[in-house]
Length: 254
Ligand SMILES: NC(=O)c1ccc[n+]([C@@H]2O[C@H](COP(=O)([O-])OP(=O)(O)OC[C@H]3O[C@@H](n4cnc5c(N)ncnc54)[C@H](O)[C@@H]3O)[C@@H](O)[C@H]2O)c1
Image (cartoon, rainbow, N blue to C red):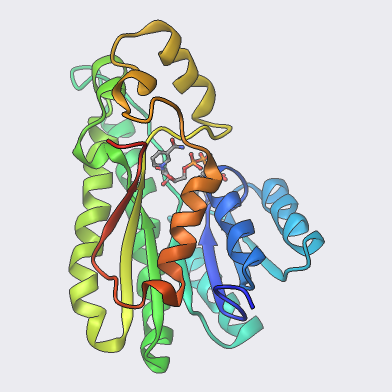
């Protein structure tokens, strides 16, 4: 028996990076996964990997910041499996700039990408979870919710940090709002993780700047995607049945 055996898990941004690892980890532990991403070929590859490992996967391709698509993703879980037990709001990213150079377009893009899909998917999933008095929602925040030295000093990450503090606040409020329905809401806050997208630039910072991820992180290395996926699995599983309103840092000690 897996730790989320026969549960139905929706994961956003599952084509690559942390979302892909999370989808594979949940499926490995018995969940049927419903996967969303704007990258169709990448999403199909994740679904194939899940099936090749003996799991079940359904995919929905499109922009998660669009109301209709977010609703479609959640409805697809209901259509195929009749329930939704776990929602992982993973989509996020940033257009960084020093504040004096940041365009309104880049600010708005970052805010929308990190917050809107999280809101839309959660709003669509909660009525189904309420009906069964059961659910686990995990949102991807970040070490950036408190500012990240390597980003702040060298790239300008204020829009991103704003969003990830926002995700933390969203989770804290919802954990209270939804506790009476036995719906747990938590965040995982990764530090510098060696994904396809972030890994190369994080490693470059390690070679070129003083306040680098390796130097500023007590464990002195980048994290691996599976280390984040393990934390999501814990919060999604019944092992965390008395844990809600918590942000679990997977950040090498920072
Ligand atoms: N990698 C890190 O070091 C790190 C650190 C802290 C927090 N995080 C957070 O973890 C999450 C995943 O990060 P990642 O590094 O794996 O990112 P990533 O860019 O590698 O993957 C994001 C996925 O989301 C998809 N996506 C992007 N915009 C979308 C949209 N509008 N609609 C649907 N899908 C969309 C992309 O196609 C991609 O598959 C994000 O919320 C990120 O902010 C990452």
